[in-house]
Image (cartoon, rainbow, N blue to C red; front, top):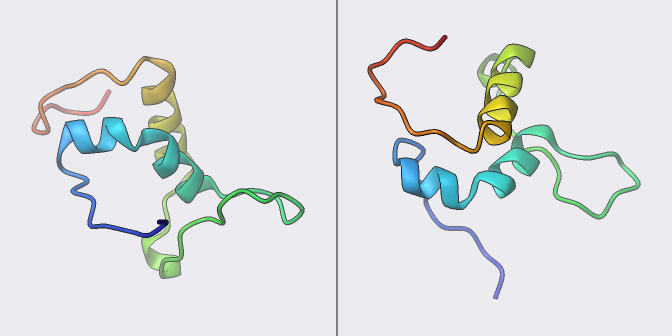
Length: 73
C-alpha cells in the first residue's frame, strides 16, 4: 500500500531514513519522468537554491548528525 505518514523533520533518524524520498520531493523531476513531482508549497515557503544545495551536500557527506543548535557552516 502506498501512502503518506507524518514525518518529523526535526528527528535525525527519520530524515536520514527517508532522505532519498525527501530529496525527490524537494527537487522533483522532469515532466517526462515517472518519478515523484516536487512537493507543493506556497511560493514564500519554497526552499532557496542554497537550501537545496545544503541538503544535497548533506547527502554527499554521508548524512552527518549535528546538534540542531549548532550554526550551519
